[in-house]
Image 1: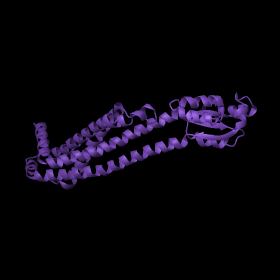
Image 2 (image 1 turned 180 degrees about the vertical axis):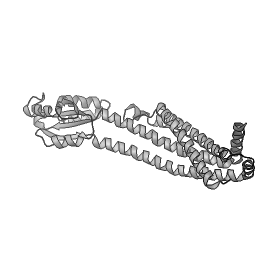
Image 3 (image 1 turned 90 degrees about the vertical axis):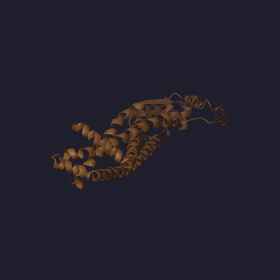
Image 4 (image 1 turned 60 degrees about the vertical axis):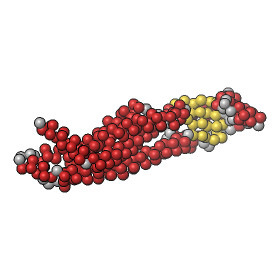
Amino acid sequence: MRAKFIITEVLAGLRRNITMTIAMIITTAISIGLLGSGLAIVQMSDKTEQIYLDRVEIELYLTDDISINDPLCESEVCTGLSRDLENTEGVQAVTYISQDRARDMFQDMFVNDPELVSIVESEGLRLPASFRLHVTDPELFDSVEEEFGDRTGVMSVRTEKELVDKLLSVLGAVRNAAFIVAVVQGIGAILLIANMIQIAAYSRRTEVGIMRLVGATRWYTQLPFLLEAVVAAVIGSLLAVGGLFLANGVFVGRVLDDVYRANIIGKVTAADLGVISPILIVVSAALAAVTAWITLRLYVRE
């Protein structure tokens, strides 16, 4: 009987303040959706970082005297460089690429752009020989460049540090922006919850007073108001979760399909959203419950 009464009161309260309830659902959906977007971007950033960590490379381009006169890397300078690079902590593999192999790799890379290949060949341009290093940590970029940049036989050092840093910086900025807007929307949702609870409690002050006179506890009379806020917040969070799945499948997935295929950034999958969805629902329900409880303690004295 008590459970039936509470459920009836919750449904009646939601209907009685329908405009406020709808406003709270929409605000909660927006704020939780933005929070979910931020968490999804965090997952994308982590996957993207792992993609680049798995293929982090440094290239040491060699001077012409080695590139032209030592195609097999048999001179003391070239073998010494190879040996020292292999013994460098954090370097997983060292590959020597001669001028001829560099030319073949260039042609394979631009096989769909024969005009560019023909221009390079007509100009007689030749790529220098190089050492390609696969490393385990982007932090090694600076140390390798500092240690080997001025070595005899090394013309220049190319790293992917700037590219990786810039990409992760962009993803971080988007994530932070989503979190900031989510916080602002969350504050709006908190204010709406507090306002809704005050209005609901005021509109039912007479019946609550009678219930207290006949022995009902404070918690029993205030529980329906708290549940109204939680139900509205959960509905809003469910809409937000549905929106995230829809946006990821219909919009984001299609727009970024080529980028995903090229393995440039990590893909946010439905499984990833499935992991964060329960978190979003729990957060919205907890936020509504805490806000409602504090509001009832501060403003409702029956």
